[in-house]
Length: 325
Ligand code: ATP
Image 1 (cartoon, helix red, strand yellow):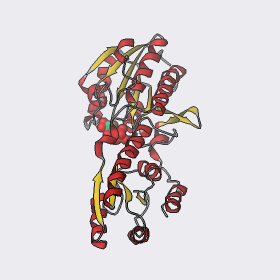
Image 2 (spheres, rainbow, N blue to C red):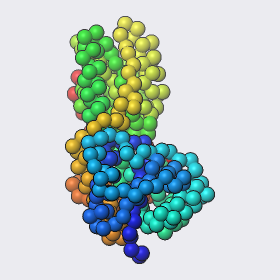
Image 3 (cartoon, rainbow, N blue to C red):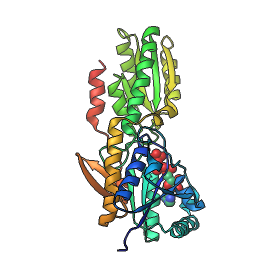
Image 4 (cartoon, rainbow, N blue to C red):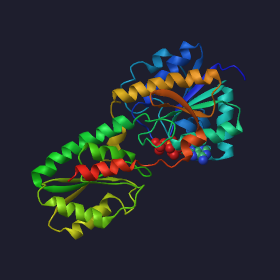
């Protein structure tokens, strides 16, 4: 195994709060172990175009508390082609980079897995996504901040819903995963949660809304983006048709869920896995994601981190049913 001297670090896919804390941890740990660090801007896009620069201790000063990513992020179609990945590899060689730390979600790790099979550059991934949809870590960097942003927003919506006796359908992020919806739905006391992983039973929803309507002035239904009956606007339309007397509104929280200061939990998680990524690379880990499982650092091969369908805990849905009486 060749000795690692220069580590490239990049963020890729959707940004998430805590990515900066992760970059800081990677850079400072690499320097601590006398490695050089190269920042790669805009993920795989920057690798292909050669947007690389040396990083030092100061380049990550005063960023732990900032949302977004100082390295910028992008989605790169070119990296999905063999020619694109060859250009990326040539740029990495040109800058004498001999290991990579990639911070992102399942797409980022799919790209890293393909790249790691084609070229002899070890890659370790950090779970940076608000979706919490990776195997091999209890939580992803950004998830905790995002769900706290959602509950802040929905608490505000609840105030106005209560004052006007309104029913709000609130859409939260999660095209393929209902994990944001599930946890925030419980935390805001939603009457119902609709997620992509389960079939939406409209009659059960109507029944629930009708039943509870008698003595409740406000109601909140949390809908994940990828909910299978058509999403928040379609559900809103169906409810308006069914209950023309209800004052029903739809609110889409959108991109506010990605931004903001990372929570303490996300900063600590990012710092822990950032340190572990560099130390793992030095110990010979490659093509793996580093996460935290039951409080302990754990390495999971990329293919296992991304390939599994994340099971929804049915108890969570039951809790909503019981508590929304
Ligand atoms: P999030 O979960 O927050 O959306 P992500 O990492 O899943 O983040 P994607 O846009 O899905 O975000 O993936 C990031 C990038 O990874 C893509 O733009 C592409 O460059 C690369 N990538 C994804 N799939 C592949 C693949 N099959 N082969 C090569 N590269 C890929």
